[in-house]
Image (cartoon, rainbow, N blue to C red; front, side):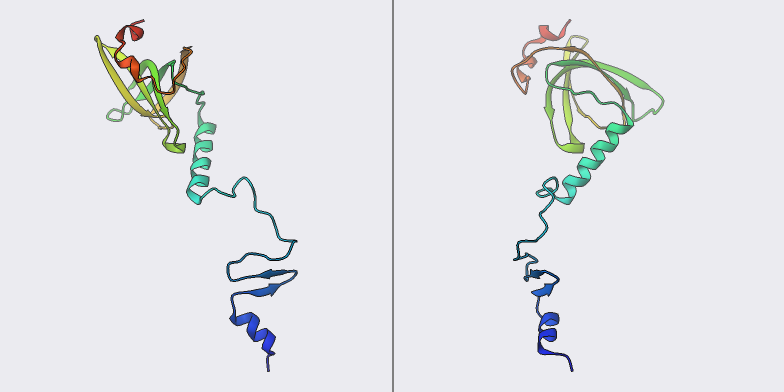
Length: 154
């Protein structure tokens, strides 16, 4: 016949395991418990997967550090025609950091008309990113350049 202590250990959520006492929440009450990994302590599963996906894309192709104020040139693969690659040149007026969904807002002039494009930075359609010039700016979002067309005509 099993002892009362063994029945108690099996039926209740809190039980004795080696030198640790586990409660119903899985929290150890003795001093020799393992400390959580500080790198993943507050990260959710989606954040960890997102970070791994970004690192995988960065190993496949070089993505430079792009900030607002940089003048960049992109080689984009046109989704309708997979063989055609178009070149887009413009100034970065905004960047939204969101892991794999990081986007940049590119402003350029086409036939005297200002055009803004919202491009995912880690998109497979972007074949090459080249930083042509770095302008020193004091803002994170350069939306005021929408009114100043002359700044982009160079």
